Image 1 (cartoon, rainbow, N blue to C red):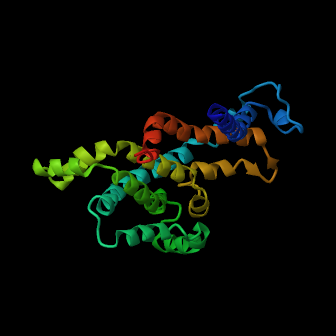
Image 2 (cartoon, one colour):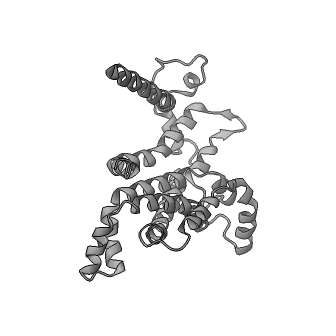
Image 3 (tube, rainbow, N blue to C red):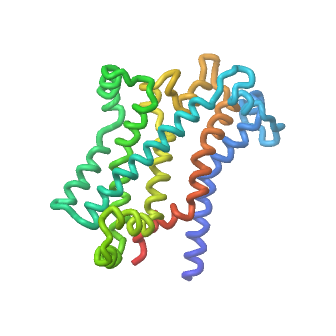
Length: 274
């Protein structure tokens, strides 16, 4: 009976996974179709394949290069992720290993900052950025992405650092290691899976963010998601071009996830089994 139950839930898991994967697979397949074949209803499964959508994405006919938006997204995502880790790890250390008074209230405060809808803070942020002259500036996006991802990172790192054995830290302190040395040579190696998981999630959130980037950037600091919307024009929706652009823009995130998949699984499952 237990084998049948396990087989049933295994089948359910496979079906759910396939259901989530099918739209992505269909997007990738459509990106290799011509516009005429991509727009047919019902769709043509055996349509001829072409690279016209990717040529359009890289500006073969329009001359619009995707590299500046991609570089802007990479700059904002990578720099903000590094800043988030530099701020979140010491904060999580203070809350998990060397707990301050009422540390639960501190964690709730971090969480409460995510309860405000992003669109509610859009106008104040726009007016402030306009006042200080940071509109269409990639460093404004770095600051915003850092502040948006920091509460999540502190919560995640708190759960990871809470699993670090206190005996290791006490042994390092007895050997004469100071706090910076303990953080660098003990905390970071032990919590490396959790740090990798936190960094990857913050990178994905920053890379995919479009609301603030769409309003606060323009020609100079436009990010990849903003560039993607340029393929939806008044002339209509060019499905093959949009799918090709979405596939190309998704590749950095997929590559980062594939490279850190072992650390991601370890980090997300850290502390799940006692």
